[in-house]
Image (cartoon, rainbow, N blue to C red; front, side, top):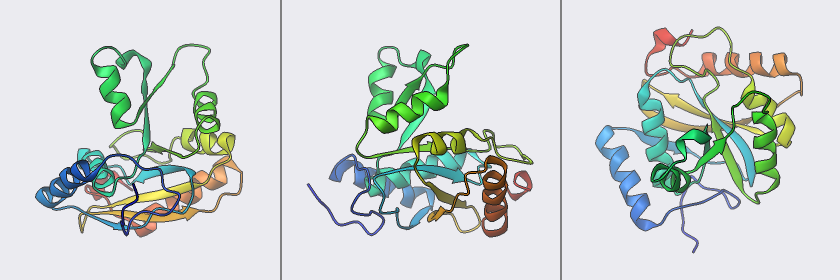
Length: 198
């Protein structure tokens, strides 16, 4: 069933119902966060949540996605998919990845995109809430392999906004793109804990 939502585009992956959207909206209201912007009109893309400086990033992003009815997939070690955690994690958007020796996570993500009509996988490119000089490159390797664009979801810590920002143009060069994305984020967005960002 279709529903009107200013944050969603025609091809956005969707999940949930009126109840889950109400729960997400209430959660945002109670925590003082707000979702602004709009998802790209793309059926498949990778979304990066930046700058990642606080536990609130994941909480506010999850509430925002729940409130909008947007479905995003997150990667988690397959060891966590035991009963009863497995069904719950899958329902929330979890995708089990094998991180064992000799396995290739990028290939697993690429296959996931090939098998899906609409999908968005979320990455925190810092890989930590601490200050980093450069982002980890797994999100870009996955985007190149799956031939999908990168979309930036920014955490505006000063105004408590989850911002659906923009598709970022890629050159295909790993170091160039990774450096450019971090520079763009650092120039335009300030996280919950600015001292952990630059």
